[in-house]
Amino acid sequence: MIGAMTVQQRAAGRQDADAIAAVFGAARRSAMAYLPDLHTAEEDCAHFAGVVAAGGTTVAVHDRRVVAFITLGEARVEGLYVDPPHWHRGLGTMLLCHAQAVCPGGLDLWVFQRNAVAIAFYEHHGFRIAELTDGDNEEREPDARMVWPSV
Image (cartoon, rainbow, N blue to C red; front, side):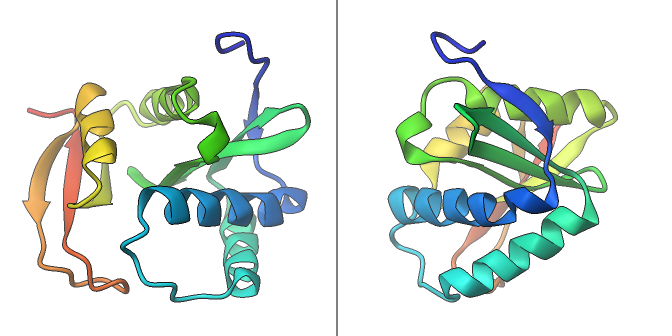
């Protein structure tokens, strides 16, 4: 339970891919409106079907609905997204703590430099900026690689 919410955390299944894509799209539109729309909703669904099939994705479920997810690669947070109506309820913290427990030797992740809220969130959880880029990514947006534990 997180606050007044009953939340189940579990491994993502094939049936979750469309819901994960929807959370991804809603979170990016709300928090990162400056990013270009590079893919259609259908392309996002196909992408996340592959991500889920590869393993490493954990979802947070409230009222039988996926409301957040985290995808882990080898010692990397590939994505952490929370559905905007569920922001500031501890879901991101719950999923990130799960990732830190799964990868106690350390993690890294990429975050857009303009996403100050996300950077502050990760810093609060012990990450630090290790590298800055000028936007050598699909979105052509400067980003930062953050690492944990910060040494």
